[in-house]
Length: 117
Image 1: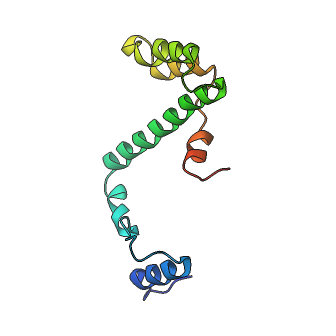
Image 2: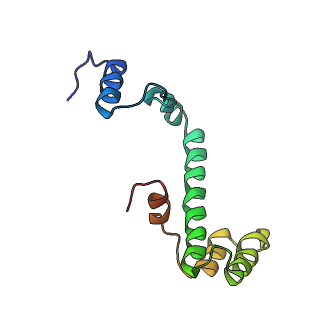
Image 3: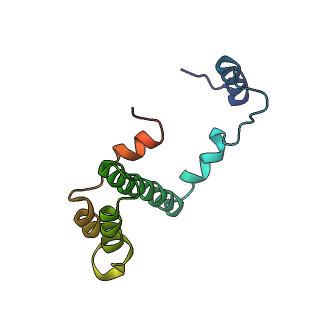
């Protein structure tokens, strides 16, 4: 689709104009800024860990939303028991299943990021 003479800077400028990007908002993350993700397996694995933590965070928060009260004392007690106070006594994936009664669901993180409605 793009030739060998593709100019990423020109493409970015035109796309931002098409979107009506305000001049006061500068691009902080350009495609080249993510090259380090693919530079080594170690960094990619570390980045995956951050994404997986976001999946778990969004799913746990959804438990509070589902309770109808983000300060729900019963959900708070379960969080304390299965997430915060269990340490290395049980495998983390098992603790999550005990807390939520199922495997983690990526859809809550995708919704939080605006990628799902």
